[in-house]
Image 1 (cartoon, rainbow, N blue to C red):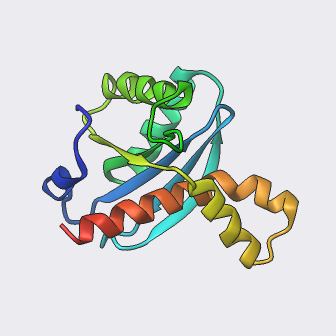
Image 2: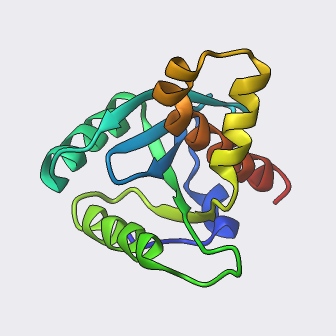
Amino acid sequence: MPVIDITEAPGFLKAGSRVAGLDLGTKTIGIAVSDNGFTLASPRPVLRRVKFTQDARALLGLFTQENIALVIIGLPLNMDGSSGPRAQATRTFVRNMAALTDIPFIFWDERLSTVAAERSLLEMDISRAKRAQRIDSAAAAFILQGALDRMRRL
């Protein structure tokens, strides 16, 4: 399935399905999943990256298990809005995933999502060691929540 625009998202949401949020890093993939009502994003354990084929297999298994209808993936744009190497790597990852699944992907501007996630974890008084383990999934939840809020306004 191709990459779609957020305005097309409601057409892909079915009763009982969910939306996944991904924060693609070089070493880990942060994961979050919505509730069935598409209102709340909940972080899931991070996926430690190995090779694309193993990462894809793990994600596709999660998508099946969680009944995922579409995926919001953070697009790491530069602060001036331009695309750098990380944004290109994210686009390549999505292009490779699209060859393996019919689930549509939506790119979501993730600028400052990790900063917001870190601030949230600090407010919850999470220790530095635990923050390091949870930051990627917290960022994925932040990305997903922003997209869910936008979809509700459509």
